[in-house]
Amino acid sequence: MNPLALLPELLVLTGGVAGLVTGLFVPRDRQRVVAWINGIALVGAVAAVVAGPGGDFPAYATDLVTDAARVTVCVATLLLLWLAARHTGGNARETELYTLISLAALGAILMAGTADLLVLVAAYLLASIPAYALAGFAKDAPGTEAALKYYLMGAFLGICLLAGVTLAYGSSGATAYGQARAPAVAAVLLLGGLLFKAGGVPAHFWVPDVAEGASRPVAAFVTTVPKVGAFAALYRLASEVFDEPALLAVIAAATMTLGNLAAFHQDNVRRLLAYSTVSQAGYLLVPVAVAGRTGLAEPALLFYLAAYAVTNAGAFAVVAAAGTDRLRDYAGLGRRAPWTAAALVVCLLGFVGTPPTAVFAAKVLMFAAAWDGGLAWLAVVAAVNTVASVFYYLRWIRPVFAGAADGPPPVGRGAVALVAAAVSLVLGVAAGAALLAA
Image (cartoon, rainbow, N blue to C red; front, side):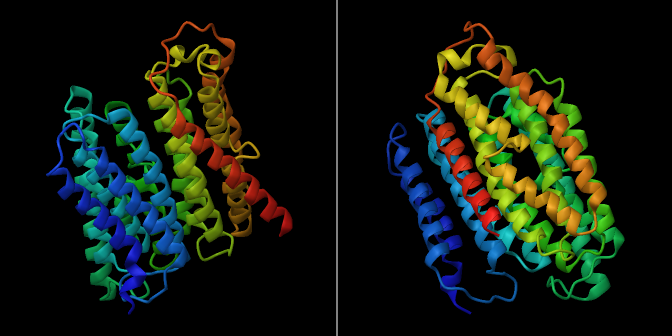
């Protein structure tokens, strides 16, 4: 075993702890340095993934899935740290905010890499507990309510996860992924815990409440980063432990359909984005459902996770820059803040899967994986849902350029949104070139 193979995780942990300690000794109005410490640690973690040596661990896999999750989580967390620093800077508890974000991100990475059910439980808790605190960080009534709902549902489904681990161990005598086997009841319980982190049906009820009640940077974080670890963990379990592809396919279809239907009539943009993330979870479950049945499942999932992370971060960054959650207040945004409006259009059309955005290439891979994996009907359901989703995204885009410019002026410049939109376009163009070359 080579301890340096865990250098990315160790750097993220060191950044969080070092930032917390540093925050104890700097004035309350000068805690921005903690964001820099955590940001440098995240950049170092990405560099360690690119240059670091591999290694084998009994309960932790350091393979392509883990490396892709490491990079995706670190890049997304870096963007959202930047967003938090721009919109929450000056808070008396600024240090705690950055530390909680880094620790929750570390939990997401560990969920993606774990190869043992017991380590999965520990990673689930590390990804969840800081997120509960983040949801209620503002200490206002909406945030407190959101945190309470988030915690209660997470605690209940966490118990389900633990019960599933217990049943899997009791039936197979092992907790390692390669040896454990989950009977039907254990599989359902394990799915419950991971679907909570992924925001999938039927464990999705917290998503709109937390997206609306928490602060905008926190809403962006909890609907983006934990999903990466959850879907990577689901993929590993589907490949090595579960034997329920039909159940996963049905959950995928239900998740994308319910998310789209619920988003149609939302006038609060944060709730609209929340249900959008639910529908995206349904699309992400498609390659999970065909895990082990086609070689396209893994690249489809990993690229979709990266595409989704930057696109969702960019959309929430626009909401943070606009400073309003009411759909009608975005009328005329294209005149008041053209670059921010352009970033919004890229992100929303990206969710639909419009070329040349990253989600377009991801959806092409997802459809191909479903078809090649013998789930053609699920590919059809995903295509119908993709077409249907155009309606509510256009409900937001149309007034941005067609409405009168009588809304409130933006409270931020939308730099994070522009960077995220640019990354989405670069990923999309690069993936398109690779697909054409293949």
